[in-house]
Image: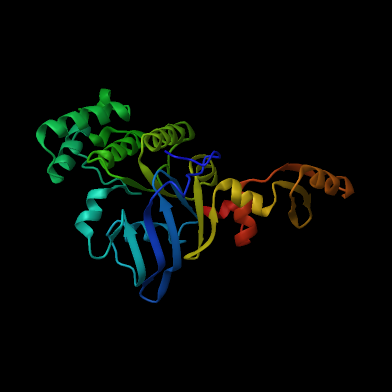
Length: 297
């Protein structure tokens, strides 16, 4: 993966691999996506961060051929999604929010079924299945029925299945939802390893820590609109790199500053205990939406 020295993919050197142009999606009279435009560069981990119902899953569904936009244009690997669905499907792997594995089959059989659907040659599919089971740490449980898998094991198998045909882009919708913290971090490690090996990743999440840890760039989605776009560091810097906060009768009050010296001076001017700290991505969300980060879920 090429980067510009701060963890962000060098956009001058990389190619655009995903693009939305002024995309709108209505469900009946509800505008689920409202004029969203952005690009994803080859080699990025790009995150769509926002509360449930913000439009994140709808955007993934439009990019993966599952639903058509009401208006606007979508492109995957240079192909217009609406008219080149076969080509698009060859380029993408999808890890859905819902576990749609065949529960009566083993892990290995689930991967074999997927390989057959993609018409992979026998020697290629056997090698890929063996390699991917090792890659996601499921060799020991490969011949166990999926109905006996834990949530984390099923999530890892879903990722292996999505990677089987060697896609250019991996889409993950809420990849760690419902997982305990240790398992969540195992998934994070796996996604970062895949990205290091060249896979572009687009994920949706309502976990701010997940977006801040994994993503080179983040698009914050709220009520169907893209309200901010940039690297986590850029978004925090726009707000102010340092925060001074104190608890009042009306709740926590925060002010943001470019330097720690400015934040310290502000803290010293207050007649209540004021904490000075680094700005976090959830501060950006609160300031942009007017809602507490706890409302993401």
